[in-house]
Length: 265
Ligand code: ADP
Image 1 (cartoon, rainbow, N blue to C red):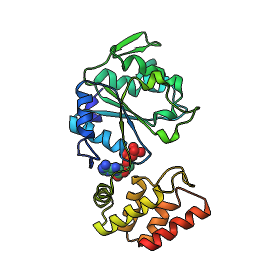
Image 2 (tube, rainbow, N blue to C red):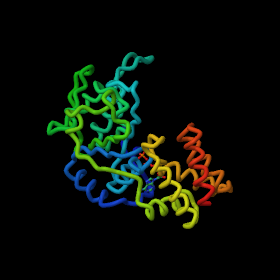
Image 3 (cartoon, protein in one colour):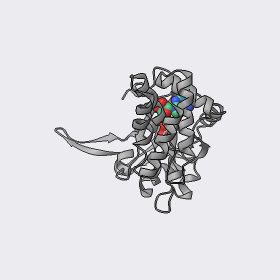
Image 4 (tube, rainbow, N blue to C red):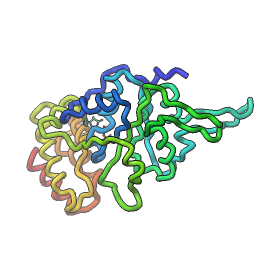
């Protein structure tokens, strides 16, 4: 198993929002488990990828969903022509060979699935492969990182305190306007004036959160709009396609946002 295939070769572009880079470095130096919290598309995954690159460590990402089982994370016996053989899951691979394991959108996973991370996230730093009868002591480079969107919090879908209280946590939000405009220029290839207008539209939509919109427009969608503009689509069309149509089917809210777009561009 060559864990270096999970290393990131080229620097993922990342504009810091605050002192999160130093905070993460300190957490990694002590191998503390980290939770990155914030709305969808605000840069959490990009941040973790950037940090893995900066620290020169491999990163194994798992996008969680409600069907994910403990065996999907830990591993299982597979049957092939030669009989049964054990195949490590992503969590086991990271713990065994020393990678950052990033569990994205952790709340999507069922709570009983998450229990497998418990012994890895306290002083024991070990993982028991019950079916195989093996106890793995985590590699010194191993770290567990999870992302969590507090907006989706509900009684049905939340992490247990016994899971939450194994992580130190960092809050993320959409970047400040000048930082977000810079991200749009770098990622979407638009000029400064266009980027600033896109940010203005983003702010308008984010103010509607709780007044008809569940979540504001993500930086990810704003990068899409910038990319479409860069492809030659008119800004008004690009914004409708990337910023409005994906997030709501409510005719009134669509109209409000379309009007804002036409006013700003
Ligand atoms: P999340 O994991 O929070 O859902 P991502 O990390 O996938 O969101 O971010 C979505 C996109 O937004 C990225 O692909 C990137 O283009 C852009 N982005 C957001 N924040 C930043 C940032 N601080 N620096 C660089 N790009 C960013």
